[in-house]
Length: 403
Length: 232
Image 1: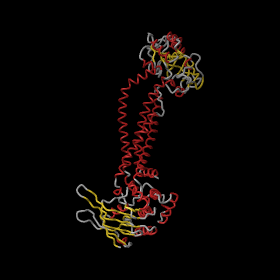
Image 2 (image 1 turned 180 degrees about the horizontal axis):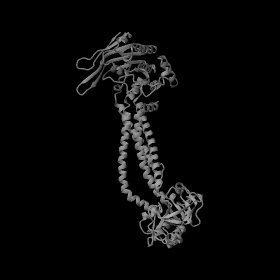
Image 3 (image 1 turned 180 degrees about the vertical axis):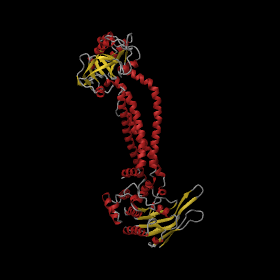
């Protein structure tokens, strides 16, 4: 009956209850969104680097190497000689070395030249292949192409379709003559490689031999057309100690650098940390204000029902009964607000994830985070405590004056 | 039996002490029906609040069946009020968020004198007696003032209280409805041999009672000090 009274009291004042729920929901939605965005960005970036234990590329900025190789953004630093690739392939410390060549695109989607070993590559040991086909087969001959999930979806490319690539990283560059033939479509990897077009590395070399023979053709700084040169090498070490030894050995290599992409991302986060800390401080202030507004709203809502409580007391309800009813009202309002807030926060975040996925290669992860448990607990507790103040005041109030 | 002995209720202001009501001695036997009369501000409502245990006296003692109400711990007084007192408030005080049936069920829930299984049937039966059985799903604001008054009366008697208090129960009603409501109260009280105390300043209502207790206006220096005289 106490719960019935509490719920009917709330329903009897729909505008007031609705506004309170709205304020609680807005606060919780904001908290949820900030938390999801922070965790999603971090996890999305880290997850994207998972298939890349070690990367070898030309000397230069490690960030640029990661951006180019892992996220398929930015231009390559330069090329690495084929000898380095051969040396790594022959190394006893290396389980697999996969060459990568960039430099062409089709309608803005990066064409990644590689060896067929990329289809056997495991992002994590025992978790199966990183790139799995949902249709068709891996490429076997030059100018065969395996397209990423989003490439197939957005460009409408299907098995058996042909397309011609253009030079550079943006659409509208110098076109290549030889057409690619789609022989496979990748399953989604929830990462940047959903937007990749994988082709045999020889295709890149062949295309550029012809491309560079064209008089007046634009030659970019990457000069990726040099025969047998590669843009980067994805290295799978045999184990952790082998990775460290390999890394140490490679420090003496004059023509290339070896990096741990995950480490680069962590360093990037550390650099961004100060800015993030400032943003976090601002977020805490907003969160604090939100919780205060929420608490005040629940408090006023509970306070405005003083007459109903006086009537209940007059009917013989004990202070304990009334206390239970007030706390039940506040808890119901808060729980409803928290639920709506969590759902709204996830909804807005999902929209952002979709928007980000269509505009950038970074795939934000979307999952229930542990921080949300704290948000639910703190939010509910805050609402309940706000209701406790008027509840405690009922002990001190002389009820007769409200009858 | 209700006993009011040397009871005063005072409120302390910054500058003065205001006596809301002062009653030397008032005894009402079980089954007796009493009209409490007096001008506005004479302390009728305060006295009813004191008798019901909603207020505690500054001095003096109120006893019901030889049990002191004024010195009872608050939780006991709540329980006693739920079980033994039926109160028709001047402003009715029906719970606006609840239906008519729920208003009655709430009163029974706190009293716990009527077995849970019988509560709905009992509420229906009483509403039927006051011709409101078709209104049980309605909310108070959907009823006329006369209908609301009848619901307030039903709520006051639903737990078969031994003490029924009614504060100006006919003030906002026309003559016919006023007499109807009063008759209902008197009938319910008679059936259960309960004490009925009705505050009023309506002479026609007063005439219905064999015993009238009058509260006189305040003395000089105090706002509403008064005494109660029994006139059997």
